Length: 136
Image 1 (cartoon, one colour):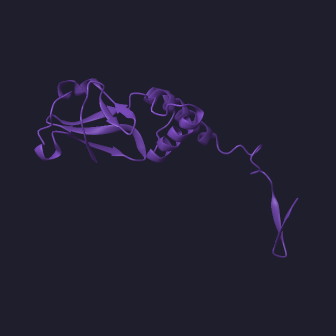
Image 2: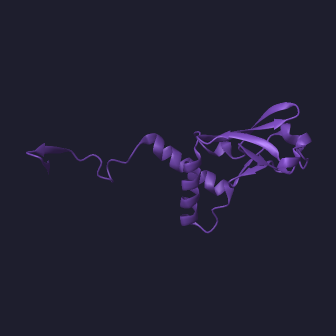
Image 3: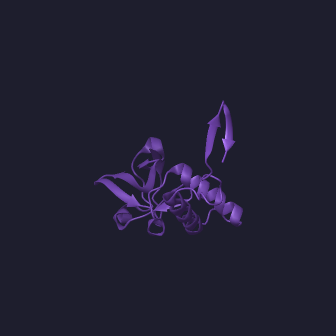
């Protein structure tokens, strides 16, 4: 859980924006929680960052990630952070959400298909001979 503002573009969390039309009446409004500086209660699953849940006076609102259509599968926070590192290595701006989303999708697609056994040596077989490893 975290406490966030609802801006014109939605809810920002770790260089991701979440938005839906259902947030309309709450944009740039205070939640009424004085001890939380008027921020809104936001819950999310760290293993599925494709959506967040905001508590409003009308009940819970499910808010999808704005770049979800660019990504082929749900993703965890550590996967998002890794995609940001890869994006930073490839170019100067790892805060560009759409660019990181494309890197994330490529990463998830590769993960879905498993390791490349042709180039990384995972396909080599070995056997144990009197405690030693012998390749054949």
